[in-house]
View 1 (cartoon, rainbow, N blue to C red):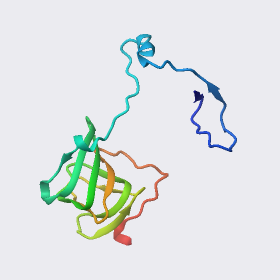
View 2 (cartoon, rainbow, N blue to C red; view 1 turned 90 degrees about the horizontal axis):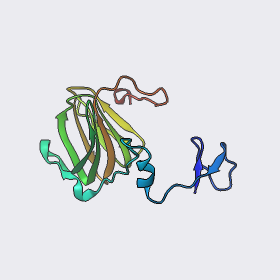
View 3 (cartoon, helix red, strand yellow; view 1 turned 135 degrees about the horizontal axis):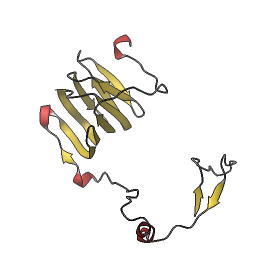
View 4 (cartoon, rainbow, N blue to C red; view 1 turned 135 degrees about the vertical axis):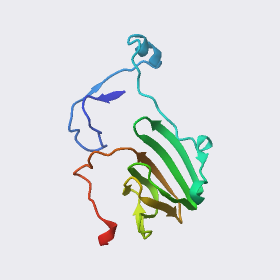
Length: 162
């Protein structure tokens, strides 16, 4: 197995930007873990639809949610089946919905819906009434918590000026 010594991905037919060195990992990671007692290693987490729970609060329909992590913030995996909706409700804290597959529409306090596609996110402020719906279905990651700043790499548009 070849393991990258940096943060690159070798694309077939392209010249690697970083040196790649061959490394052999033990087939059983317990051998590796034994040399590092108390250290936690990477975990692979599955968003198994059978473990998601159906959400019907606020009139939500065809909406399932899997909580991934919680603490000062919460991270969840959300699925809206075709025709599904997350009913209108107030954000309890800042809430970011990032669509990773499919598309839908979102609204904020004014109730006007705006399209949202894969690769786009909606950000609501605490107390802001909002709703999400999808005719064809969508999968999203939802982050709820304090956002100190947004990345400068993001292109921000205000639906109020569209």
